[in-house]
Image (cartoon, helix red, strand yellow):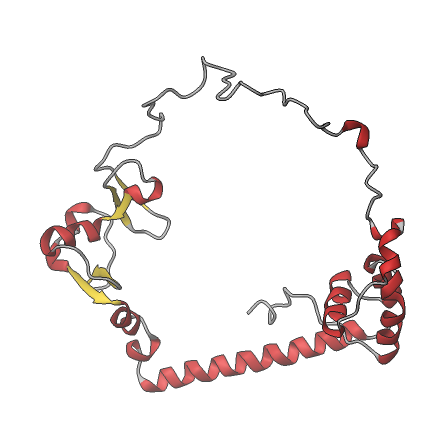
Length: 229
């Protein structure tokens, strides 16, 4: 999906000359300097090196270009053997007793159990418990079903028989709910069961055409990106 929308950057096609240059430079040259010489991104250098199993020259790691230090940098500011950290013996140090939360404190925006809310997806939820974060809130339809029929079986979901999704608690009653397995719920929402065969075939054909159009557009854009400026 992202490739067809050109979110991902185009691939780099390595030539024989560029590959030979990479083999020559990589053992003694940082990848960040090789990339602009070849004309590709640094991650493409790393990818090619990994596929070819190239290795750095051992002598390269003793040079400043490798980015490694001699072990002397920052020596004067390091902790010395036997040093005592500044917070030794101060476990649980408290800086502001006046403004910190107290044990049993209730946030100002806390909602009591039984409060209703509507999610961004339009689902009516009720606060059913405390102390579990987002799990405090449960779909109200689920609560009503469990009151009437007991726990919901594993890999099952509760939904409205007519496909509606009321946000008024008074409209959520057990006789309007049904418990379906994941499979049955998937089939219920599938295009293959909600539309006539002719429309399903057209929908599938449209998807095939869209993929082919995106594939050709991507290939054309990659060819244009690889043309010399």
